[in-house]
Image (cartoon, rainbow, N blue to C red; front, side, top):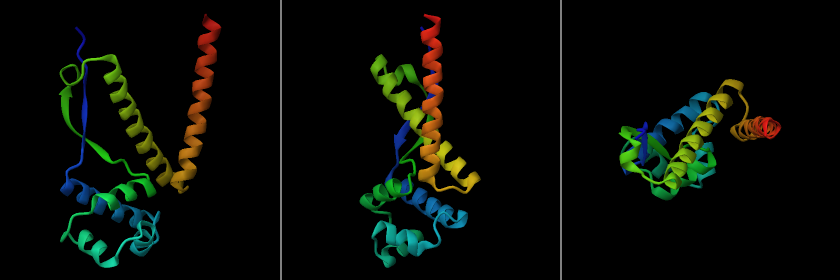
Length: 149
């Protein structure tokens, strides 16, 4: 039997969402991806007072706002939280493929964020460029496989 060691991806708890929200909001402003908090508030169509309460730890971020924030700023909504034995968590190949797709998505989103910050390009532009590059690599790999057949 083969055992796979990996990270189990779990959804955030409400307080984890708020912590990540605050960290990401500050990172967006610090990195210049958002000019200031007002830009984020406007993008989320949210109340300034409630935003301030969340930012200062007096309230948790509402789920609908958190979801919109992750979509608008393309932030990963789940985090790896513990090491686990994959064989004990999931059994079928289909479930493993679903997990693998999740890991690839996290890796891709993280890569897009890093490349965007290092290049200074908008996240959407970086995402499109990386998708195009990956499509070319995949096409090349498929062509090589066909040649070997």
